[in-house]
Image 1 (cartoon, rainbow, N blue to C red):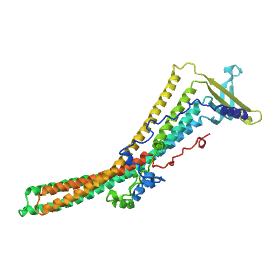
Image 2 (image 1 turned 135 degrees about the horizontal axis):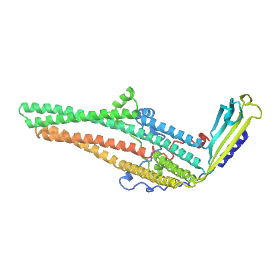
Image 3 (image 1 turned 90 degrees about the horizontal axis):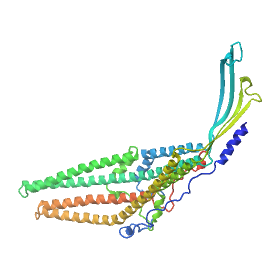
Image 4 (image 1 turned 180 degrees about the horizontal axis):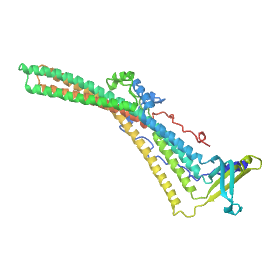
Length: 490
């Protein structure tokens, strides 16, 4: 009867309450309790800026914001990460569904023709018909999760689904940082093209003057050859930086995941120097070292560690008896016209218990594997923390030195500019050979390119620091909240 099947299933669910998952203890962070001190770190944490609401509060340049917004919609790596999250969530649903009986409905009609003489039922030898009809529903081989094997597997799948959601958030931070860095690279290459074009125009003009001087006898062919060599050198560099700028745009387009629209491209083309990109907010003073614990990759590593701990519970439960229940309820008759008449009800329930007696060490080996995998996940978790600490420390070291380096680089450019102006003035006055002017011009050009490289490294370092801290330095940043178990099948 129906109440027999339902009451049996309810009792089974009530029994499925415990697990053999070991108590989880978060491993201690294998890093120092504070950031490195002394130079250059002391100079990195010197301003008390307000917390950042979201990525737009850090990436304040409008062009950069538009590029990032487009990437968050179209970037294919983010699409892949999202589908991985969906697959992991569905896998949890699969594991969780095993906690509940599968109820199947069915109908049966079986008519068999035999000869009565076969069973000595009659001497006539005529045919004899066996008929069987049934309609009902039932549960087939439902495992009562007394020892928590299924529940442990379900919890492990849930933890892995949560880890996938955090991996998606880590990918999101990476995409944001990669787009920002790619834009900075394009602007730097564009600035290098502009500077090199100016140098080339200047050298062509100087070459014409030197050649004119040689033609009238006031100059030498050595000066002409040196001036011509300088022109070709600038032409070569211009081709190099033009190619790098095009490749940087290709990389930026790939990260954005769609062609850059005309308005954004116009705004990007207007960035003729890195100084035209809005600065990033500075690092606050007293930045706690435990902020890295909020990084999505660290949280994901811990969830994978929890999942491996859950797997041990599943492996332990395999040593204990399994109880399976097969049950059915419905009606049955040898005459289809009487199938639904009173008194045709039929039901059965068949519990089965199996106990592992000998398996040549398979279950023991499975438990050893689960424990070894947990140790691997502990090591991965600790390595993730160590890597995060190193990334932040490196970025802080960069923040503490790039400011002074930029100041020195700007001073070098100013001094080289004065040197070149004086050398050119003396050459035009006939006091010094052209070689001194060429050397001064090359020194200025190298200082200008060095300034572009240094500023790009300093700005990219801030992007790295923002990403390394898990997306800013708010005391309690927003993190993706995984769907609770109650949102799935329970």
